[in-house]
Image (cartoon, rainbow, N blue to C red; front, side, top):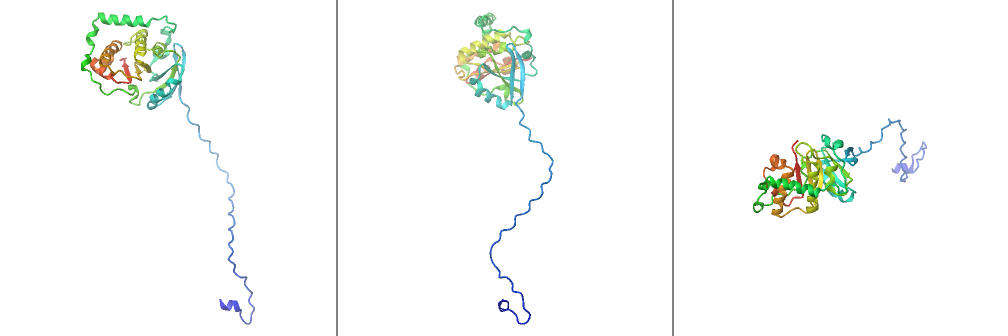
Amino acid sequence: MLKWLQGKKGKEEPVAAPVTHAVTQPAPLAQPQAQRQPQTPAPAPAAPQKVRMVSMLTGPLALKQFAPNQAQAQWLSLRGRVNGALIIFADIEPHSELREPEAHAVPTETGTVDYDAILSNHKQKLTDSNFDRHRPVAETLAAGEPAKEFFTLKGGEATTHLGVVPVKEPWRVVSNATFGSWERIADDDIVTAHLKSWYEKYGATPALLGPGHLELWLDKPVVDPELAADLALEMFSLCPDIIDEGVETTEALAISILGAHVWYFWWDQ
């Protein structure tokens, strides 16, 4: 280092520039030339919700499909925000009765059908046949595990659609859907008469309809054993299969009613 500062004798050495410590910025990297890339399609939009059209006696009805584990929550959330009766239609594909209204009379809401008289006549026939012998003993009834979910949706296998049936009273849904009057199901008028009575007395609202099954929802369940005993007898008279092919006794049916938000009906086809 000292020799460099003093220089050498003889041959003249070029003087090197002094070393500086300035920090220089690195030159920007050269941008690679753009290469032609294959065109990639834009992501496909989310699949629209499946819509199905079915024929009701009041005209065509559009149904939107929901997953079975979402249908009940959707029904509970939307039921008070629609103009009509919100219904979960379960497994409607094989249920031709919902799509063949020609065999049924168009229902009216003008009061021309006396459903109270129809129900009274139905109950009188049961009395004449000593049907009361099937009434369970209220004192022996004890509440079990009350139903809070629709039975049809529990397995997660049903195909479920929601639709708004244009009726003022939800108990008229069955007659508009041409549900009854076939095989073991009672006439539409008898089913509707029971639904009218249960809706007006207990707030039991038709909520789910399918091929051979019907489910009602109660915001305030029945908790009186005497009342549950009477209801079990009425349900048995309308839907014998819930006993014969289901819970086996009216006592078991009455127990299932106590505290339950859901009433379930099923007819063997």
